[in-house]
Image (cartoon, rainbow, N blue to C red; front, side, top):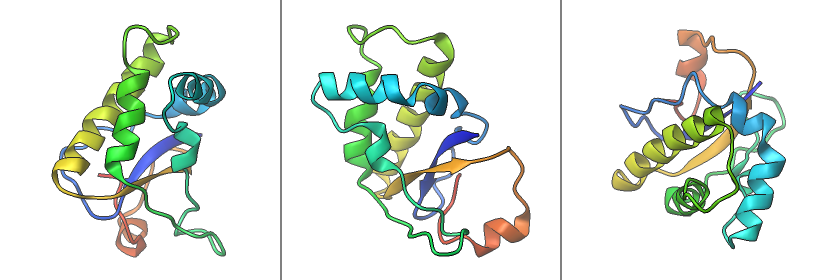
Length: 128
């Protein structure tokens, strides 16, 4: 299982598809650190998946997400394992791109790293 950013329209250049496993496994620590530093916890950006029946998809401001992720990647934050920092940096870079293109996002819980073209055609948003 992974926690992946999902964008309201394709970004191009987002390098997050194979990341996110550590964000999920360290989610409680990340949320605690966010609360300690006065930014929104990552879990507040989670949404239902538009491909799952009866789940509601909710978009969030990329600027708000970026504020959280930038704070979590500051040197004075509780030290996280290398893989968490790597996932945060990938998320940060994707959110910077989303901000520049004025694209909203959310975080989806996703199992596996495979996605068919048919699935991507049916989705309202994009992982890329």
